[in-house]
Image 1 (cartoon, rainbow, N blue to C red):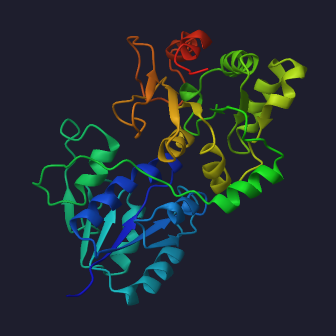
Image 2 (image 1 turned 90 degrees about the horizontal axis):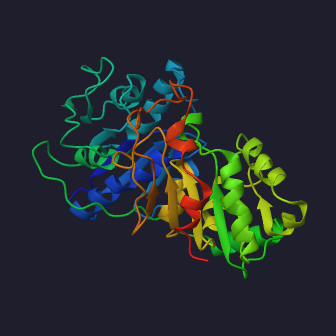
Length: 338
């Protein structure tokens, strides 16, 4: 029997790529012999190397939002010799469906999106009420259009213990003392970010209780983590490691695994923490835990039920951000084990 080969065009965002693992798990359960190759940009491709159900991560080196038609044609030409049976296109954009079309993959599955009628030949119409979560929408593309969805498998990222030990040495970290991980960033926009002074309030209390705090984020998040550090008394510096912008994405995977608990906004790192088994407390503002929940056992979700939330906006259209500003450090501290 010939091995089935599937190409997946993944989303760009870190959190979305982790949620897409629910699709890969489903495909492998339905056909353990299937080969799954996944296209991803350089920023998030490393995560695929930690997913045991991805056979080959493919670097698709086009910036987010770029067309670069020539590169897409060349990339597709290189894929033709692989002989894929199906492509599953997770993003809804026109350009995301071009490579499978150019590569002449016989079955090209995806949701109806930006003028994709000729690019996809297995086009699905999204029923948002029937598929309320992003993972439901991803998994449905791996099934026949009329088949019911099974229970999802929680995403899981493998840990590299050698790199983990190396990170502890490189960043002069001590994992023997209880660690609270804090992820104050959110790439989507300010309406997803709990204020830095509130994160600092939590950090101050947990350090005083005998824990240490590790701050995670990208180079862009360094502004946020620096503010948190400045708010804390200088004597707390030894118990607060500011790692934002100093680590690779895979370093974060391996280090956040050592955190007994993690506090995060609805962000990519929230999904990373969930996928390595952390106990997680998630603060939601403009987005909804119904659409992008933490995919782990017994997560704690904190949100304010106010009339304007969720609005799914990058910035608060009412300019008050009460969905986040009304959440106090005490609300989070009550949920932590100390």
